[in-house]
Amino acid sequence: MIQIRNLTKYYGKGESRFKALDDVSVCIKDGEFIVILGASGSGKSTFLNVISGLETMDSGSVSYDEKRLEKMNEKELTRFRRDNTAYIFQQYYLLPHLTVEKNIKMGADLDHNRDFFPAMEAVGLADKRKKFPSELSGGEQQRVAIARALAKNPKVLFLDEPTGALDENTGRLVLDYIIKLQAKQSFTMIMVTHNANIAETADRIIRMNSGKIVGITENTEKKTAYEIGW
Amino acid sequence: MIVSVKDSLKLFGISIMTCCAVTVCNLFLNYYLDLSAIAALIDNPAAQMFYDAQLMTAKVVCAVSGGCLAATTVVMLFFYIKHYIDSHSKEIGILKALGYSDFKIAKDFFVFGLSVLIGCLAGYLLSFMIMPGFYAKQNADGYLPDMAIRIHGILFVLLVLLPSLLFAFISVGYSLLKLNQPCVNLLKGIVKSKGKNRDIKNKNSFVAEMRCSVLRSRKTLVFFIVFSSFCFSAMIQMSTSMKDLASEMMGLMIFLIGVVLAFTTLYIAVISVIRSNQKNIIMMRVFGYESTDCKRAVLDGYRPAAYIGFVIGSVYQYALLRIMVDIVFAGVEGVPEYKFDFPVCFITLCAFIIVYEGIMFAYGQSMKRISLKQIMSD
Ligand SMILES: Nc1ncnc2c1ncn2[C@@H]1O[C@H](COP(=O)(O)OP(=O)(O)OP(=O)(O)O)[C@@H](O)[C@H]1O
Ligand SMILES: [Mg+2]
Image: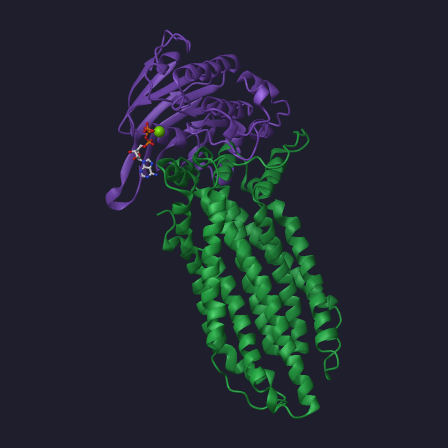
């Protein structure tokens, strides 16, 4: 369970000090699939970065069961990320000089996961394993990023607009992969998106505005990636 | 305008390099010319022998240090230009897509000659500052008649103006060569997958794989690392022998030049390997790799190159001094016997290990401080 209490985050100093997160509290259950919706600049990415331990908070607390992020130093945070989380960015951030399989190995190694072939196969990249990222299409690159994160067998998966740069077909394909894997392996999944349709695939939807949570809705009728509009 | 004057100023490595080269060359060439002018005043055989040896030394030192430094400057310049084009490939790609010709983009690289000009000018002035002391030391025993320092215009042209122009043209030419690739490759930042892509061995860890690829993708840096430890090893060992063979002043000069060059090149190499791998380091940290893993992946691949450079440096300085003593000073009296100095070599090696590993450790620590948020900034 991820317990987030009174989370506040400022950017900048003095005159230009800006409250990016304003007293955010929410509790996320294990194995839950959460979608975070909100306008551009509403603090979604900031929220994700803070609760995943990529960024520090100014006040409040984030606890994973007994472990409290705000009490950890840099070394403990690194260890925490290694053992618990995986992150998928909108811009993929693959390592350009390494082939597909070596990129995936980056995630797999941390779990002492010698057999990362299934993860590669799951995203349909088994035949492209010797290629370099620059030789792949945008959708293929995104799938490498996904396989890399999944090969780590994370307990919590964070996704920041994973389908933002993809066309409808590839977007649905990628989303379908992720949702099915989450259902099967039942890790916790927190996804940021600006596409309200995607929210219909989640267990719960968190809406944000100006750094605040303005609504949390339970989604009773979960749809698949192919049933939603785009 | 893709390249600005400010970019040229960032090439301080080149300025330092050329400054050293011009200082040494101008010092010895000026001395050589002033010596030549007094050839008629030498009246006894002992003085004649001393005089000839002095002429020879000036020529050898000039050729060796000048040539060596000039070659390194060229490599460094190429490295900077390639690095610049790689890291600005998107902007350059957009310009090419808009219809700018290669030459129109490349001609801006002319300003890189500025960094050479600055270095040369500084070196030229510096050499005149140390010249009086140098002249006095060279003729400490009074074999030669008194010599006045004269300023030779030709040296200013040869050592300052010509190199600056030459390097400016080399910059344009080389960047033309580098820009000659499909526009889309520049836009997508496609890196040529050089060499064979070795099959993944499951026993190799990711960190080991990463280390290989970092090394392969930045081969020029291997040269810099070798050169850096070469300078450190050769110049420091040579400086102790020079103290006995020539003068303390020569020893000190060589020591200083060696240390400056070693640290400049090492700094350039390490900073650029870290900068160009910044995103990769951040991704590793996001995934939970510790900073020591990042250091092992990004920096440790260069360690063999550093130690190889050290060995080459030791051999080189021995060979060079052997030649000087056996050939140049052959027949000159009072030249001390020269042998390979093992204790000095050992001490230099220890100093090298401490300095090199210390610097690498410090950079490894600095990877901790790279903000993970930086990856989202572009
Ligand atoms: N490093 C920073 N320094 C200052 N302000 C920042 C910084 N990062 C984000 N902000 C500000 O914080 C606010 C929230 O940013 P955030 O990236 O969380 O928005 P977002 O909801 O993810 O938007 P988008 O949908 O466009 O990605 C924005 O107003 C942004 O300008
Ligand atoms: Mg965002």
